[in-house]
Image (cartoon, rainbow, N blue to C red):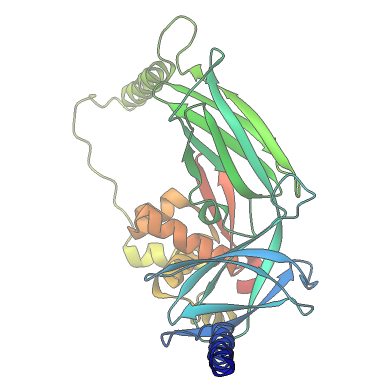
Length: 353
């Protein structure tokens, strides 16, 4: 009997020791995959202060993978990311619990060549709303927002600058720069737009009442305006032909045009931005081929041009052009401002003069 008790005691003691040893192995942190490495990120606010002890949500996207991190910075505003080798788009959000809207946002790129890299947080706010028509919600309406911003790429951080309203006509832009933004909605022949002030850390709301794009008489406004414009143009052309006593349908000889060399010389003389400026050459040398092409074109246009003009002259796809213009804006080389449904791109004068 005593022998059996001693045997069971030794058996359970050995089993307990093995279980404790196995538990120690499970407490060890998992190893880092061989194709990833730890990257140190320094998080700061736009005013230069350190974002210490802050809960930051980070979205890291590359051609191969997408990762979401919820990390808290240390006393020095630093945090660790485990990333594969490659180039990443880094989007960050900081949202305090005691405020109704998103408080700070950031967009940047990371190529894996430098560590630590800096994430700069800019003031932000949120916007939600509803699209209605005659008091009823309108689903699947196209909702767009346009904000003047030199801080973060709000279209990228929200997934797009255009969203679709939900079944109840609702829409949401999670993070927008603190400015007066124009939000618009459209569907078929109905549209609406309003200006909204985005406040820091606040959640703004707006209701868009769709209205028909025709006047009260039921006649389409745009076709009538177009017809009136062409009628006035035809009348002015007829008057000019009559004063010159030239038959209306007679082919007129084209006026001699100066040579292309002369035009290029005159434009270069009138241009305030010189391509031979050493400072301009140094800045252009740091840009990609397409960014340098856009900057050179703006310099020949006295430092400013509309987005549609750049797209037409340089034959750059709209999506690619907007991406390169936003990249130049983040580098403080180009300033973008809304111009109706277009964008006006202007060079920062102090960089090229």
